[in-house]
Length: 121
Image (cartoon, rainbow, N blue to C red; front, side, top):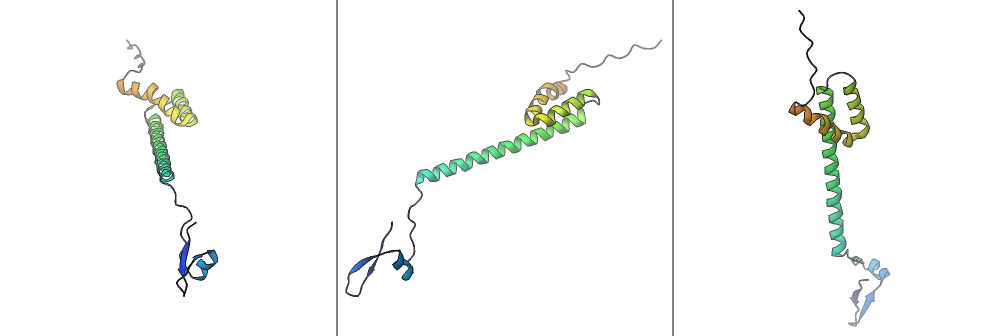
């Protein structure tokens, strides 16, 4: 605890206790200063938490992109409904599965195309 001293009339000094500090309006000094290690840990924690939040926002944006891609580019039918259910139920994990299973293959043109019906004679 930080002690303040007050000089009396005869030149003597005495330590001020809490009562005297309030009585003489002396400024209160902090009892303990946060050590540098605790400050560093706090800063690292805030950076870590901020990084996790940023990563979560990126996953949300990726999920919305895959959901929009599924709605706009999948042909109507059972596959579209199944993929929408997978995307909605599995959230970002479903988005990753959809990206590797459908989106990349569609952009490369690797899907099986239905055979054209035979020409009519």
